Amino acid sequence: MRKALAVARKEFRQIVRDTRTLTILLVVPVFFLLLYGYALNFDIRHVRLAIDDRDHTVASRSLVAAFVNSGYFDLVASITDADTNRLMDRNDVRAILVIPSGLGRAVRTAHPVAVQVLLNGDNANTATTVMGYALTIIRSESVRYAPARAAPVVTVEPRIWYNPQLRSTLFLVPGLIAYITMITAVVSTALSIVREKERGTMEQVRMAPVDTAAFVVGKTVPYFVISFVSASVIIVASMLLFGMPMRGSWGLLMLAVSLFLVGALGLGLLISSAAETQQVAFQLAMLASFLPTFILSGFIFPISSMPRFLQVITYAIPARYFLTALRAIVLKGARLDAFWMELVALAVFATVVLTLAAVRLRRQWT
Image (tube, rainbow, N blue to C red; front, top):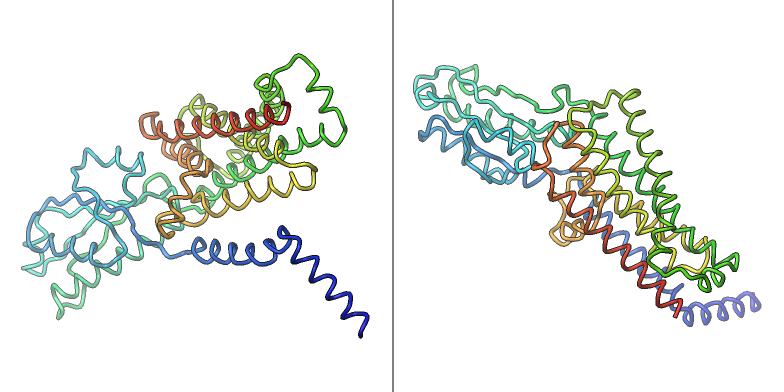
């Protein structure tokens, strides 16, 4: 027992001196608790709601107030029928409440009337939950209008856009495409420069008449070609095997895939320039690609339900923009004006990470 205690004391001293190990043991668990505790939230809050009020009576205003005061919906626009396509395509709203003319008169006479709820169905889980919220609110209001009536006065006429059957496959498959593409692209280039270091060929590269920019581009191009072919195969396979539609432009889809891949490959090169071994590079690549893409991109968990500080962090996650563009193209058939900001964000991310990778390599070579 005395010998075991001596070994334990010695190990404690080593752990205290090794700040990296101590940080992993103490800080990382807390970090994961905060990340998972706040981000893994299936509750749907702050649903962006638009109102198409064609009645403009006390009853219609009361119904709108019931939605807003429920705490689930945020009123962001008052629209007409002509605005519906534009708002849905751009993800400016997730739901539209269409109140027909004559609602006030129907409520006074206890005559049945249907209220339409339009839902963005590109996220099947969110759409199902939001529909449940809307049904509950409208039923509660209907009871308040005519408490003695057996049948509800106000009924719901739902309409799901882009995914009428609310197939979860059409929601999950685009996310899986982004998830698989991100991981494979980051890991592939994350190991490339480290492999040169471990084999001792990095010194030969430094002596060659090649600047860092040309070296980074040369390292990226082969992996880009391979990753692009792989991503294309995944997309086609998703359409053939899982029935994912293609309602938009193939050219815009390939542009979005290309920008996303360049950013992912650049992130891998940045990791590779910082790591010294392939094992470390692989771990960093998985940490930088797996968790952000799965948790913070909107793939599974809605970003609007996350705390504000996590929502800010998601702006640095390229998969967030790629998912929005991918769903807009394949599910909605949206035009470029609906998601051009996402493509710009992907281009900015790719430029930043490639520049940082080149700067780090230049410092190491001098």
